[in-house]
Length: 243
Image (cartoon, rainbow, N blue to C red; front, top):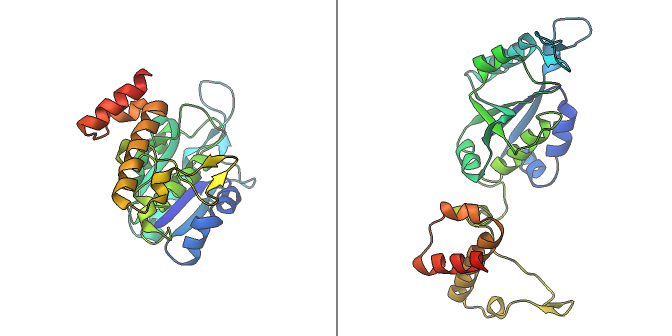
């Protein structure tokens, strides 16, 4: 899968994504991540891409033309118009289902705003998806883009050493992930649950499912509205929320 990140700060993006699991996947050819510098498409000697907004107001606004020229160059290089995600608090909140949908794309482009945002006219012309990572304001779209690339990349086959781990983790089936334990068996007088030491896989899976329901009911009961629970699990979740 190929990611293109249109940004004013390419080093910030690439320094963060060229490490750990994502960096290894890039080196193995499973992913391609490229930061495209919008400043390269400025049309003045100072390489500035911002100007004062019409109507007044605080701050500066990114101009339409450099962003459009950046997008045009990217489109010509790819050979078709890519899906373009604009990171904005006005967008739909990013979640695991969206990550799964984006992971099905061959190419995905991100547009990172800065200052007070981007001229609305170019957004209307090139953006296909408006996405937010939460109800707060950041200084730019670079960190949200990096978060989304990380979440989406984990769903690309081969990126994780154990592909099963991409299927059984938080937010899968709208349940939070169950608690997990490693060696030693006893730490600070706290023991690993006996069921995990039993080797009985059916009992372990049953325990993990129950723990996911309990943890979700305690910490994110809103997720249960979309979770598919058995009658017994519904009773368990209701009891936990009432405690």
